[in-house]
Amino acid sequence: MTKIGFNVLAWSAVVSDEIMPIADRLKTIGYDGIECFLGSPDSAAYKRVGEHLRSIDMEATCVFVVGKDESPISDIAAARAKGLDRIKWAIDRAHDMQSKIVCGPFHSAHAVFAHHAPQDQEYSWCAEVLRAAGEYAAQADITLCLEALNRFESYLCNTMGQLSRLVKAVDHPNVKAMFDTHHANIEEKGFTDAIQTIAPYLAHVHISENDRGTPGDGHIDFDEVFSALASINYSGWLTIEAFSRNDPDFANSIGVWREYSKPWDIAEKGFQLIKQMCQKHGLDKQVGVSPSL
Image (tube, rainbow, N blue to C red):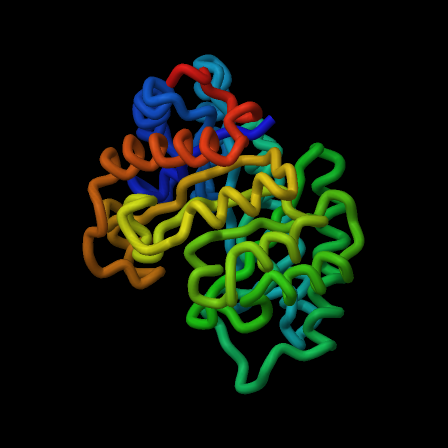
């Protein structure tokens, strides 16, 4: 069943008890779950937040990145091994939260570039690491959803064509793909072709405006996005990912230098946009909200 989520990175990159009242308010808006960044080391906090979500009938999905010294495409075997260990750590934290999804660009180090285009050997190294990660994720019934990023944040996977190649090479049922409208707006020729390309592997979607503010306030063609998702009978999460400077350390790390929209405005207006688009394009029959909303 298609569900609507909101990434709490708009408030904080740290999983802590402070997320609980945010989840409570998102629940009143109508959200089915929240998405959290896996980075903070306190495993007990993940369990507490997961238990709280369960108590209010919400779910969690998770997003995750790897750094330079733990990249699955490193030419140093020890770094690739460290990358696998780090992904396993993320799977453990997602399991603590009772999440079934870990998404993100952990196929390679975020914002780390080489002086060459992506190479066949890098895809092979990456596939080997992610296949092992998929085996580990399967034990917890977790799906790893790889993300293509724009050219300013990654060089291995910018398009759905490249991402399809990687997921196909991994060849594991617990390793799939996600689609992010913000990155696709930069890298793809059109949303329809991109979504149809990734359709065999698609398991998660980020609804993000071109400026990372409120979905519907920018120039992303959400009519095309939702029409394409309906055409492939997509039934996974529709999760808003928008950013702010509420968490300065995180904002600085991803180049967020100004406020785009107030987080609660994003949450309220973004939810309305998703409902309207789902109803318009026939996805409302699968969305976990009342048809009368």
